[in-house]
Length: 122
Image 1 (spheres, rainbow, N blue to C red):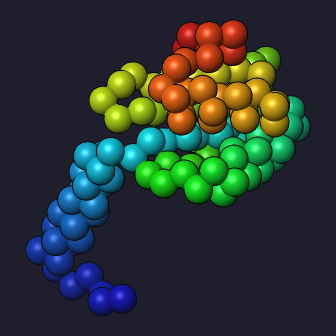
Image 2: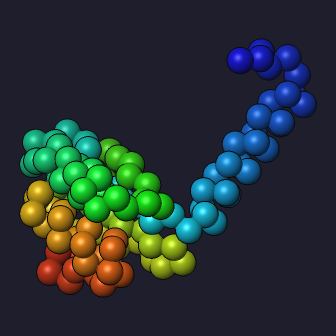
């Protein structure tokens, strides 16, 4: 990696990072975010994440980006999972165990239908 020697070097790095982020936002990828803060992990978020990844692999899904986040302040709803479909508002789900995660992956991520029973408002 090249050392940053000037403000111009820093600006070039910033511009490149912003371009990558913008490319990711417009690529049409679906995004699945699993809350992996301490409270989420204690509530079973590891199993939720594993279920999401297993579903993607078993169904050969493409254009699905899976990430994790820390606590979002709704510990009583953990494990929490969010789904962001291209051009749509983010949907947040609560109490997402491994089975609920599979259902969300099938119905929302694959078929585009929000799973109403687990939606929470933040």
